[in-house]
Image 1: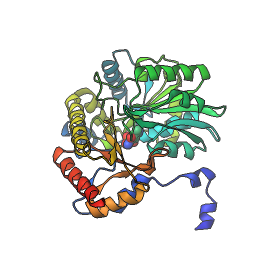
Image 2 (image 1 turned 60 degrees about the vertical axis):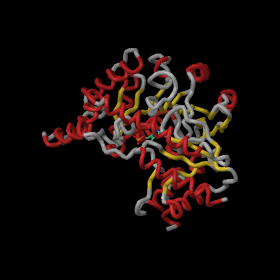
Image 3 (image 1 turned 90 degrees about the vertical axis):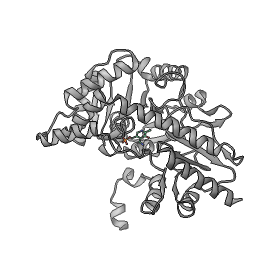
Image 4 (image 1 turned 180 degrees about the vertical axis):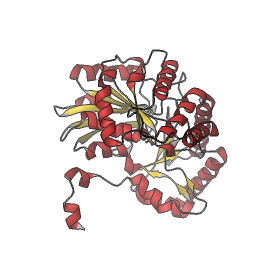
Length: 391
Ligand code: PMP
């Protein structure tokens, strides 16, 4: 075994186990467990979307396809974004990928080489670091703080963290796991800094429509970018349309990079299955009510979990501004992974341990609240009973 291990590349050996998956694997077969550990809801994909994919499959759309995605889907993406952000988009910006995760992986492949550094605000979804390490890159985390007004990013610390080896800033807003959402002013300052220093921004805005502030969508680099800005947007069908298992997302990049991206898709996956893309077209063109229902479910879930935990003095959290997670701290908690495993055994609920999310995460737990009200109420009762038993 050690001989095999020694034969691997340094970057292959450097990949850590995801702490979220550790708890997931421990508890996945428990009877009656309420799983709040992963970033997905409890509704299957709506038939409006799955029927379109089934029809395409039955029609024989089973051949090799366009590397960057079928034109009707890329056109539908341009129309969808034009409507969301009130400015024109072109299909040349859109490149289909196998999930948002592969969009992250490709963004990193495009701009990060051996020894390059990426600055990442934390707590952060562990897969950002995983993708960067897998390319031989390094992560420099910038810890955020949970204050009276929620999670906050100190921009001076962010900019100070950028050194000579820094190639990119990874900005995930709204954030998984904290729900932190950058203001328009913060995004503008980050873009000005990146332009000035020639840095790339990898903008993961997949939760942009799960936003609890003013307006329908969180502040975004989309409204302030120019066509030649060094911004790569990570996006996915997973969350808005309940399609996590489809593994379908996209990378939005400056149109002039189209051929380079096509080459990368060719050598990574050679494209997304054609019949799945037919489902994507249906989601974008006729799935507005489906996305709206997901967004409303998340807003209700946020209320339920926050109201349930509010009375507990030992619990520290701020109502999240975006996404569909609550990252809460428990006073005196020092080993969130062990406690998450205990919560599986003793409360039959699955939470993600804060330690999985890098600096600032330990001592916290992440709940995904995109679930039916009944399940969430039961889960919160189990959690608060468990907390009462700890005293
Ligand atoms: N970015 C963030 C911030 C996420 O939370 C996730 C999924 N949890 C992804 C990207 C990846 O999305 P997908 O499931 O489509 O690969």
